[in-house]
Image 1 (cartoon, rainbow, N blue to C red):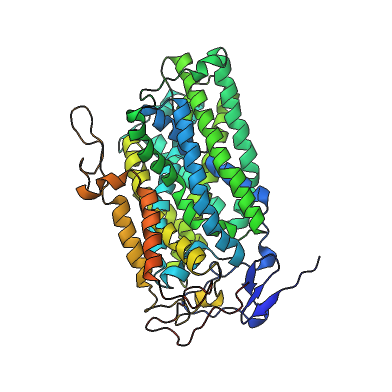
Image 2: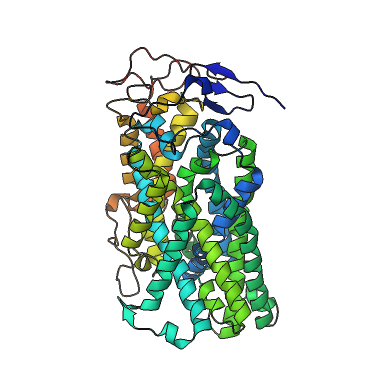
Length: 536
């Protein structure tokens, strides 16, 4: 069915609300802020359906760190009901900013770093982009180490004791380092084929991983002699004060797990066939999948306690206890596919775009992906996930707090001040509407810094029975005055940054819904009025 579009200057508004550059206006100029990877996706190429987004989330949520989230919560005292409740609530909360930021990707066909230019400026956007990229590189390293560990352990069951007891190098058998490298190479080969290859991979990986996880549940249920023993994990906290003292920092940590995607989800939604497709696909995919996977994790682990006398929280370690070679091979393939599907989508796509945004003339998507892979090795990921206290409270909590501030600025700018209206071509033009002062919007930077200070300034480490801090922070917090806020870091960062950004922009609106007039800063074009062609 033919459709019509209305044009204003260089952009066209389609009846379904999506916007693209006017094809008759020619390509965007090569000015240091444009590249093939950063240009808006034409509407004709925005083809991702509800299933594509659903499959993306199923593939990303079914991974080893997701599995161990529930186990980490149980390890700090929760029972299975409390752990599943915490994870379910966290994913319902983080879905909201995910949908709000994802809207811009589908409407304008732009990736996250270009979207950030509207609020931070053409140059200033590199600040949140590189913050997000740094987090993604660390996550990439963690997931790659886990994938390599899967190859090492499960291959050891097939190849014999000599594989597992090979000579050590840096504290690990050299065969484990080889497994790590093999998994890294597989990831690089897949991502080198681009986003369309990723979409196809996620489409078949999602159902495969679900089948593999259910097979593991069936196996441990049979070994345990039925379903009853799988629900016997008691709570060490109860439902009183002790539980609530753990609940809120754990909730922020669970939100922090996907706070990364709450920022760079436009990298995927820019390919969306409609807003309905991305909204339904994400709403159906994220909270349901994460909750069910957490429940599956607890059930399988409780079954392992009944079978082996102690809980085996790592599904790789559990699968390694299988004796059937066919079962081991299937488990190995499931682990590989599950880890590949999340690591490439969640932790390579974003930094690849972010690094391209930093140096578009020299770095393309594939080069950015390779840089991500190298940095992911250099951060020593095996040390980061060794302790659940460090993993949940320090890593996830601090990351969530910092990224929550970026989400606060983006959402406030796009939804509250601009009413979702952007000038698409101006996002690529120095000296234009989003140039602010020499490419930086100081209001966004101030909101980010203040929000970040409030969110993570009170970060502290828990102490053991001997008074020893279980993490890198002082027990009374980096800034003791801010310690009470640390348990709510993501929420504090998002709310504080959004509120401050709106306050700093008071008086800069030109009329109801006209949006921030970003052209009045020094160094920008004079006379920029209300954004042209704004929809009613």
